[in-house]
Amino acid sequence: MFVENVKLSSYSNYKIGGPARYFFEAKSIDDIIKALEKWRLLAPYQIRKANFGSGVFTLGAGTNILFGDEGFNGLILKPNIQLIKKEGDILRVGAGVLISQLVDYLINKNLSGLEWAGGLPGTVGGAVRGNAGSFGGEIQTIVKEVVSLDISRPQTKIIRRNNRDCNFSYRSSIFKLNKNREIIVEAALILKKGDRKLMQTIIEENINYRRQKQPLEHPNIGSIFKNVALKKVAKNAHKSFNSVIKNDPFPVIPAAHLISEAGLKGISHGGAMISPKHPNFIVNVLGATAKDVKNLIQLVKKEVKKKFNIGLEEEIVRL
Image 1 (cartoon, rainbow, N blue to C red):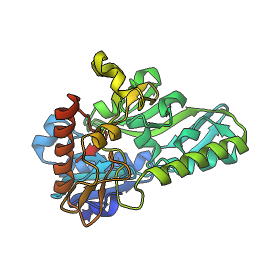
Image 2: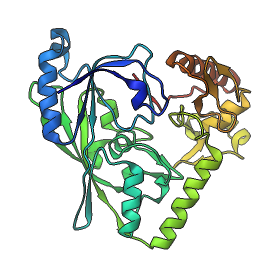
Image 3: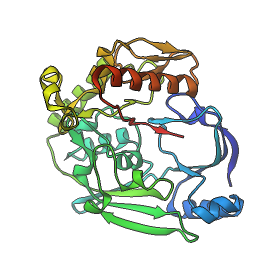
Image 4: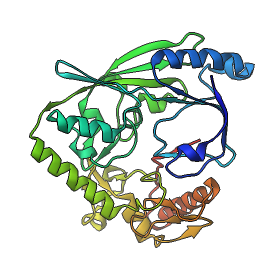
């Protein structure tokens, strides 16, 4: 059932990562439940006693994950559930559906609400978990319900949450906070009728913007750090950032600006480099290791803190 010693670099947009002890790609909820039953027989007793979900990592498209060089001594479970089903005003979407697939579907059906995600990488499950957003939009604005599996108990339990109970916040949700306890399997989205031509124009503009401004020519995992909420910055410093403040969807100071002003563009360590094109991206330019990336992350945090007295928070997931 499980594939053993799978190279995680093959499942990472970064092309970085050691081997996973076990790997399983699930196509349905039943597949996930059966995989977890087998895992509970394989997992060390200490892990099962603490939390039956411990030692299991849920993988989407690998577009925001930094896998460790040493790999993962547990089960990587990829819920590749490919469901897109319209039920009245609701669209039910499986966790494994790529955001790009969903955007294409919505254009064809003249459904509006996700134009901001044009060019956004990753899966629907990952987007919901991290409350993905860009160009002033966030996925929480169209989520009606999320279906997940509580895997922390001896018997896997299906949980249905409405939008409010998902506790969405900036690039976060209850699913992100409940580490190793739940697996998102489906989301119900509320969309509205749109103008196909207008939707296509907005989406193409967003895709082109990403191509022009982001270093997509190199393996990457997107923005490393969250943008900084203006309310977290001392009021006497606001004026110095007036020209760069943007809505994301509330007023923020772009992390890329802080990194650039700290003089870190183009700095490299091993095979990793802080992108000169977009300094909130650390790109794999020459066979980088996770250690190379981690060293640059620490350097950025240190230098931005020194120059601006602002602590940057990571947006990526580390494993």
